[in-house]
Length: 487
Image (cartoon, rainbow, N blue to C red):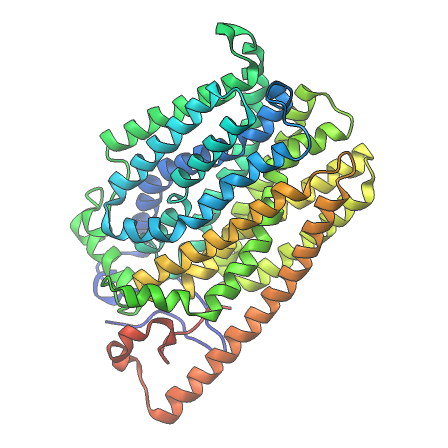
C-alpha cells in the first residue's frame, strides 16, 4: 500500500487528498473527483435532512415558548429553563452506549429507528398540558436523539478519508443553523393554525414537525437511503468502489477495525479526548445559547412574537453559509485548531457586544448574528478535530461519543444561564467566559499535538521505525509512533 500523497512535516500533521496508486492509476483526476462527488450526492442530502430534523425538533421549544406555550403551561421562573435543560442530561448520558450499539447494528436500521422514536415523542408533545408532562417528553427526546450526531460523525469517518471530514460535518451543522432559520419560518406559519381542531399554535408546531420526522424516517428505511458501508456502495462501478476502499485504507493507515472493549477504554482514559470534550463543551454552550434563546432574546429587544420568529432567520442563514465555507477552508488547509481558535475570537466579540448592548435593538441584533456565525462553525469543526486525532474505528466512535456527549452538557448550562431578560447579562457573560476559556484550550491542544508529533518523529528516527512497520502498532491506535496528530 502506498503512502498518502504529500508528507508530514516534523512536529505537525497536514491533511491532503489521498492518492491511491493501485486504482488511482486506472482513474483520471476527473474520475477520482467524480467518485467523491457521487458519494456526496448519494449520502449527504438525506443525512443532512435527517440532522436538520433532529436539530429542529430539539430546539423548537424556543419557538413554542413565544408562540404561547409559556403562558399555557405556566412556565414561570426557571421552569422553561428546566424543560430546555433536561434534554441534554439524557442526551449526554446515552451518547457512548448508542455509538457502541451503532458498531453492532446496521446504520440503515439504526438511524431510521431512532428517527421514529424521537418523531413519536415530538408528536406526543402536542398533548402535554403541564410543566411536568413537558419535562418527561424532553427526557425521552434526549434519549431518542442521543444516537444521531455521534453516529453521523462516525459514519462520515467510515466513508471519507481524514482530509475530507470537516467539510462534510460542516454540511450537517450548517443544516443545524438552517433548522433555526427554517424553524422560524415554520413557526411563523404554523402559529396561524392557533385554535384549529382545539389546539394552540405551539401544539401545532410540535404535532406537524413530529409527524414530518416519522414520515421521513419510514421513507429512509423503505428506500434504503442510508448505505451501511463502502463495500455495499452499489451506486459505484467496481473500479470506483475499489478505489474508494483503498483510499480509506490508505487514509486510516491500516488501523484496527475489530470490536474490542479495550478500545473503548482507550478513549475514556485518553486525556486528549477529555480535553477535546471540554473544548466542545465550551463551543456547544455558545451554540445552544443561540439555538434555544435567539427567539426570546430578539423578543426581549422589543419585537413582537411573529417579528421575533422572522428576525431569527437571517442570523441562522448566515451562520449556515459561514459554517460550510469554514469547513471547506479547514479541509483545504489541512488544520483544525487555528480555525477553531479564530471562531472563539469571533464569539468573544459577539458576546461582548451582546453584553454591552443593554437591550439596544440594533447592537443586540448585530451581536447575535456575529455570535451565531462562529458558534455553529465551531460545533462542526470540533467533531472533525476529534475524529482525525483518534485512530481505530472503535476508539474513534467512543471518542466522538465522549466528546459530543460531554460537550452537549454545554446545552444544559445554556438552558439555565439565560434567566434575566431583557439584558441577559448572566447568559451573555457565561458564554463570553467559556469562549475565552475555549480559546485557551484550543491553543493548548495545538501546542500539545505539535509536541507529541515532534516526539514521535524523534522516536521513529532514533529507533528506525518506518512506514512498512505500521501493522506492528495497529492496536496502539493514535499512540502509535507512526500516527501524526492534526493540529
